[in-house]
Image (cartoon, rainbow, N blue to C red; front, side):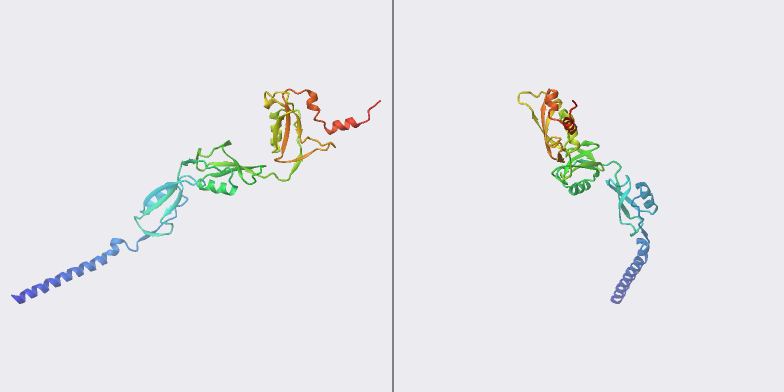
Length: 280
């Protein structure tokens, strides 16, 4: 009885060992088939393609797709910007490929404040906010190289106003006063509104003062310039010279007479005519 028990025990132990051995060998023999080891597919490059085309390409290779979106103003809408795994990677079929696509409608953001920044800093801030540089114009100003004004679609835009990403922002940049000189512009006899237009073309500043303390100025814009300093000509009747950004003092009267206007506006031709010998 005791011998039969021993024989039975060792027999069953041997059977258990044989079963586990068969299962072990079977598992590793079929592991290659179960995991499809060695059956990998190369990830195609779908960056720059339209999202629909990219999905069709990846679906044909039996990949799963997950799509996210962001916005890049310089890239065509609905184009694939990024893919994970990266192009050329070898992965198994059924792997999920993550795509980042460029949005169709750009999001709105608050307009940053570029005024008083350098051009380089303004460019960096625009780029960080995914805005584009529009037209740049230079204006004589003591703040050389600084941003003086910012505009969108031809209109000034204040910091904080909502604006679509990808919008073009135009800038006015200080150009310094420089050393370029030109003749003093003659605005005597002009209204303040006309004088402002003329002086603005040469980036000149002006100060308005009444020519007489006895006269009341009722409408500054329509008041007439009766004298200016510096004058158009010096005592030798040679045109005075001035630099951009300089200041001209304008004396005005509301209703000056012709003598009050022309008495301060003698052109060289007038002097030459005065100096000609008079016929007897």
